[in-house]
Image (cartoon, rainbow over all chains, first blue to last red; front, side, top):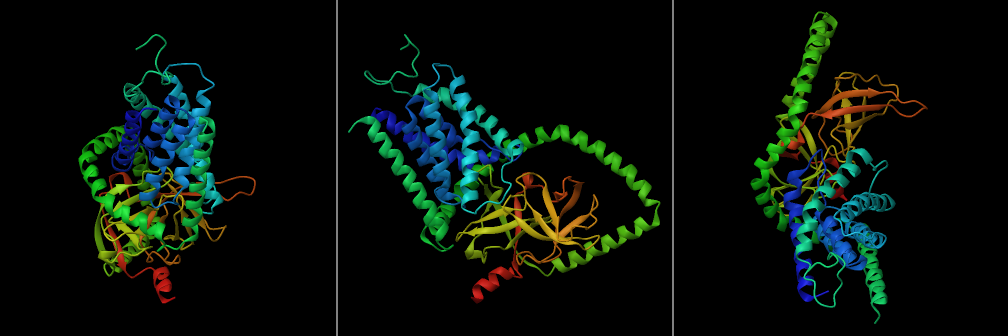
Length: 175
Length: 282
């Protein structure tokens, strides 16, 4: 990964974090809002690989944990696991379509919310039954899918592909 | 170092850092270093949140209104049905007497409320998490705010303070799944707990399993939880679902407070929550 790309990704995480805490709560629908940090982490996992996605997920989740009244580390953990899984799952698909991140975001949103709640349950910080599938998990997954439709094309434009680097997201024959 | 080995080490380090942080955070007290870091950033970010909140409020109101349009016509139909029902009920003197009794209780409550000491605060942010129903207000310990103080609006109870910075605090709404409030049914005086469900309605769990709950019953705080003063209105029973196989029934309570339109709240600073007084005495 080039230095420019690293700087761009760091900027993307910080921007996603600011939007997440300041802007996204204003766009809550039925009590649910998109998780931009997870969306960015999944897109990075698709473009760069599972570990890169996990690092972005960890950094973004950590920033969220620091400002929120929540158990520090739980958000970072769940976002890391979800982004890493997205990167691993991506290897099973041979497609350059935007449908890939859309599908992955849908799947890992469900996973991330579940891991988050399970961890809090294990720590005794959450009461049963916390899993509101129809009221929270599915609407959040759909909302994140809408967000990735915007985020993915933007991040693809800034892929800064260099000679010798991975061309995973460049169409065959494309420049 | 081979790339795959390096990646594995990075991942293991991340997981270890997460587990260590979680362990430290859960084990430390509310005044521990990690909690203090959170409170510091809460204070730091609340003006930013407030700034964006003001910018995007017209957009948000537009979206909320758009989504409320279909429900408005539904509400109208429901209200028309309710009017017809109420007309029938009005002819029955016993029902009227019950209603008068209820109004007397509400009047008594409002008189009692006049003695509560409150601090006004603006909502400057909301929780970025989908699992939490939290709001950030622009008043903190410098304004006398303490943990567990009740947050109300003119419509009723909105929540309680769960984290306090010097100039901002976090309010846990009554609809949050971790929220539990000691409540009382104004009609039959039955007490219990109203639990949040991360939905727009809450669940009332009466202490007496045989309590007769009716749709329309008004729920107020009982004062038994040690956080909220007694008599603050919470919501109205919207549904009583009977469940089979020996499971508890579901008494659904709709809050009076409309959280999507919340801008200003009052924080009750006197009387202080009993739990705070007890903690300070220790």
